[in-house]
Structures are given as C-alpha cells and as structure tokens.
Image 1 (cartoon, rainbow, N blue to C red):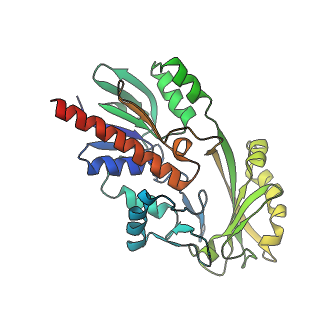
Image 2: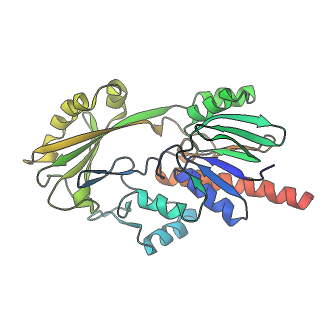
Image 3: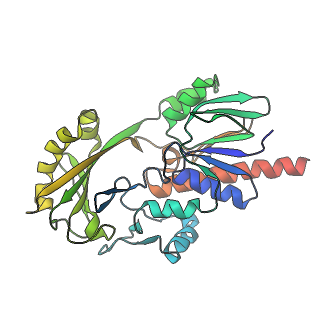
Length: 322
C-alpha cells in the first residue's frame, strides 16, 4: 500500500497543507487538474500585458501566517501594494508567485484531474483522468465542496447523513473577471478601487500595481456576485459590452485594445464552515479551503495548516501506538 497522503488541489489550502505535512515527515503528493498552481491566485498574460485575474491581494492578520509572510517577502515573491496605506500584500511578479514559492520541492502532478475517489480497505483509490488509478493511504480535498462531494459520490462513498447534509448546503458566489488591455494609461488609482454600486466590485490597473509593463493599461474588472450569477453564461463580448461602459471613468481616455474573460464558478463561499477544516480519521479523509478558513487568501492558507496539524496528530498517535 502506498503510504502517501494525496492532496487534491494546488491552491493555497492544498499547498500550505502539503508543505506543513512534509515538514512533519509525511509523504505527500498534490494532484492539480490544471497546468499551473495557485488556484484563484492566478496571473495571466494577454499579449504583452500581465494580469492578476483572481485574488488581487492578500492580508496577514493571524500570527500563524507571519513567518510565512516573512519568507515570501525575503525571497521577493511578495511586497506591499504600491501606494497602499493598508496592509495589503501582492505577489511579485504576480499573485501566482507566492504559490510557486510554496510549491518548490513538493511532488505536484499537474494536469491530473481526479474524477472519482473510492474508499478501499487500506485507504483510497483515485481515478485520474488520462492517468488511471492511484492508491494512497489518506486523502485531502481542497477543491470547492460541491466538487469534493461529487468525487465521493462518483466513488460510491457515503458520508454520515448529518455531515453530508451540512456539506451539501455549502455554496459559493461566482465571479466574472474581465481583463482589459488599453492603448494608454488608465485613470485607476495606484491602490485600485473598491466599488460600492453597480455591476463592478473591484477595479485595478496591473501596470500601476507593478506587475504589467508601464505605458499600457492592464485593468482587471471584477464583477459583483449578483452580476456574475446573472450573466455567467454570456459570451466574452457580451460581458465586455456591459462592464466596459460601467468602468469608463476608471479607464479614462485610453482606448480598449482587447479584452479577455475568465469565469470563476467558485469564487468565494457564501458562508463559512464553523471550523477551519474537516478531518475524519475513521476514513482518513480531510477537507480544507476558504469555505472553512474564511473567504480570503489567508483563510484558505489557515485552513490548510489546520488540517495538516490534525493529520499530523493522527500520524503521531499511530506511531506511538505502534
């Protein structure tokens, strides 16, 4: 039997859990369905412009995160948001840089999409699209809760009725992110704009933020949950027709060169689970993510750390029993 702990998802929760468990001596493999790491800490290039297309910044309010932040700052992958007086931090050269730093040295299998998780006598058997079966001793899922539940259903795994019902009520807001390339500088303030009314909730110029080349506006427009839910199925051009006019005062006199649309189906949890993680030692299954730790980058990170601590305690108890 493979004694490895498999972690589904290379977002902040998964990466933090993986690093913490590896530091405790555990064998860990991270299974990520996409080509990159970081989840919503995503950075995208559109022509010569560079955009943070998901999380725009992160904060550190919990003492448990201070040493991590110190490492990220020291290694140059995180810095204060330019011109920002509050405690907002950004990745350098983009938000994904923090995730890449966390992934250093980890066994991460990219483009490994888990389609079913089956409970077997000595652990878990995972069906991976295009790669067959993988057997592991313990399983952690940091995927959005609906996706995690779908994997268990596909594998014929039935959680206890009460827990399954509670997890089934976890839902997420969607978010449409429109990436706008301009032919000149925008009118967006250096620190970005949080908008209280209309279809937009956040506007930031990635050139002024310091991650895209200067001289050409690279503006990320994040739509509100209500707008995103209503227009989620619309085409890129249809969304642009609605959002670009709403952002005109921030785009200034510059012309729009191109747009790109990214859809975040599980952008942030509607509500947060009462505890920072779920750990079921009787079936060696753990769940973590921002639905447990809170709808922020730090929340996801703390959830991953909390689950890693719970699993490590189980491992130590088993070793002492032997």
